[in-house]
Amino acid sequence: MNKKKKTVAVDFAERIKAAKYERIYQALKDILKVEIKAVNGKDEIDYAATCSAIKTKARMVIDFVADLDKDGDDEK
Image 1 (cartoon, rainbow, N blue to C red):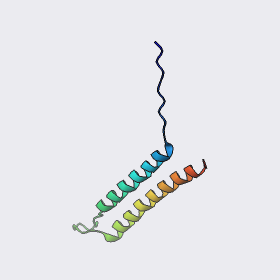
Image 2 (cartoon, rainbow, N blue to C red):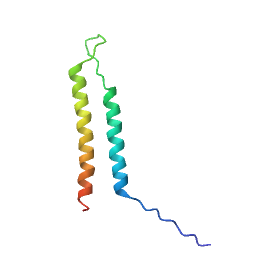
Image 3 (cartoon, helix red, strand yellow):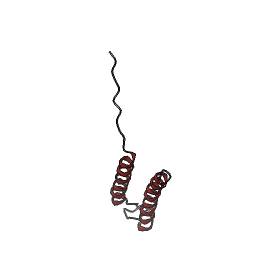
Image 4 (cartoon, helix red, strand yellow):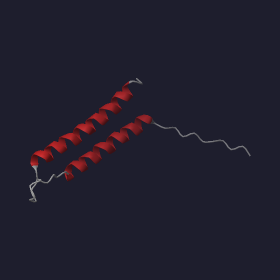
C-alpha cells in the first residue's frame, strides 16, 4: 500500500500577520496590567517606574513587528 503524503500549503504571509496580531494584542493586555510598586515599604505605585516599564514593553513589541516586516521585505 502506497500512501501519498498530503502536502499542506502554508501561507507564510498569513502566519506572519497572525503572529504580529497576537504579539501586539498580548502586549497591550500586558501593558494594562503593569503596575510597579514603590520600594519605600508603602503600598504605593511608582509612576515613573511604571511608565518606564510600559515604554520598554511597547519598544520591544515595535522591534518585534519591525523585524518581521524587515524579514518579509527581503523576499519581495
